[in-house]
Amino acid sequence: MMVSKSLKDIPLEEMILSAQQGDQTVQNYLLKTYQPFIAKCVSEVCKRYIDPKKDDEFSIGLSAFNEAILSYSPERGSSFLSFAKLVIKRKVIDYIRYVQKRPAAVSLDETYDAEQMENPTEILAVKEQYQLEQDSWYRKQEILDFKEKLKLYKMSLAELTEVSPKHRDARESAIRTARVLCEKPELKEYVIAKRKLPIKELVKNVDVSKKTLERNRKYILAIFIVLTEDYLYLKDYLKGVGQ
Figure 1 (cartoon, rainbow, N blue to C red):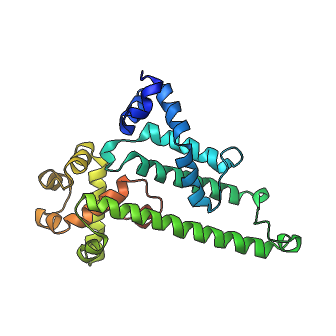
Figure 2 (cartoon, one colour):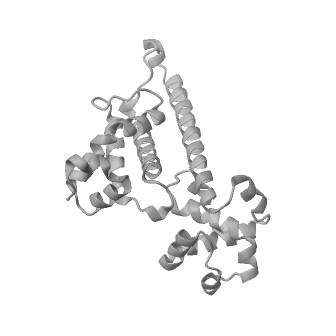
Figure 3 (tube, rainbow, N blue to C red):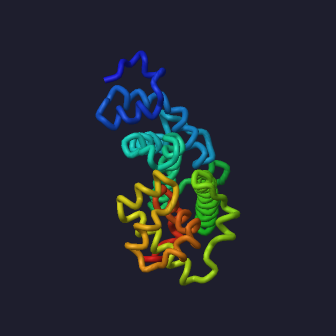
């Protein structure tokens, strides 16, 4: 177990590993030390100041940060804080959606007077507008993170647009191939480690020629990134495709 007084001098990812191995002292240290970071992430989603002592959303964020500590893997290709930020924001958004679905959980800004509060149509309209804004903001965050992941594979979003298969059948075939990469541990580990397709092994597992795999290499890798990351919105575009 690490000595508490020296924790601040230990690299973050080393502490994460210790926490994953059961070191409660390190885990509690991380949960306490990174509360300002957690509050900032939660505040960005809620678009207001978050009081760690009063706001339920902070508790959700704290729980999500703890989940990130226990599930993080450097092999994902992102830093721990980048990964934790996505996990926190996703969990808080899930919580907000859950609360909004409850009939008794209608809450609006205090600037709305009593008459407005009693108007179901206006309440619904405000809630829908708020949800649209949240969805738009979070989708933008995912795209920004996706662009950073593409850089690790020496690709850009603009380049991806150019190399994407033009025909629907070709796109679906490429997405099926990406799913195979994710489903087979040895292939998945190869891609994460090498940042490239295991062409020889892949040919044995998919009904696609080597030439086609090489031609659609970048698109397949991009889909692989989406499937292996914690992307709530980008994954929606792939639901039911290539399965």
